[in-house]
Length: 136
Image (cartoon, rainbow, N blue to C red; front, side, top):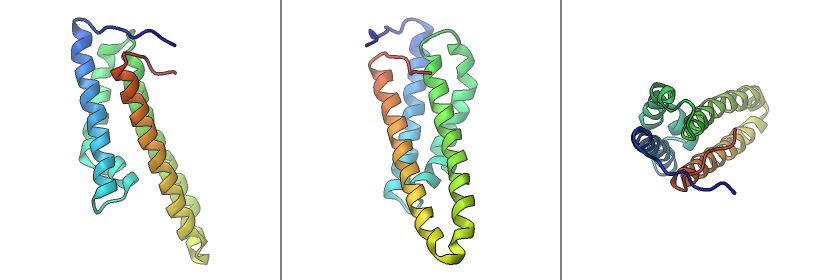
C-alpha cells in the first residue's frame, strides 16, 4: 500500500482543481441518475463533465511529474473510454433494435457503463482524498 503523499505549494492548487473536477463528474452522474437524462448521457454530454474534462486538459501540464498527474489522466481516460463504449453499445444495439433484442442490449450496456463510470469516479476521488496516485 502506498503511503499518502502530502500536497505542498502549487500541489495544493492542483489538488483543489482535481477535487472540483471529481465533484463536477459526480454531479454529472447524479444529474443523470436523478434527473430526466440518462446516467451515461448526462456524464458524457452534461455541462459538469464537459467543464471537468476541459479543466483536466488545461491543468494536467502543471501536474506533470507529480502524483497528481495520474488523477488528471484517470479522469480524462474515464471520460473518453465512456464515450468510446457508449458508441460501441450504440453501434451494436442499433441494428439489433430491428429484432427487438437491441433495446435490451442498449439498456444493459448503458447500465453497465453507468456503474463503471460511478466506480471510476468514486475510486479516483477516494484515492485522491487519501493522497494516493492512481495506477497507470
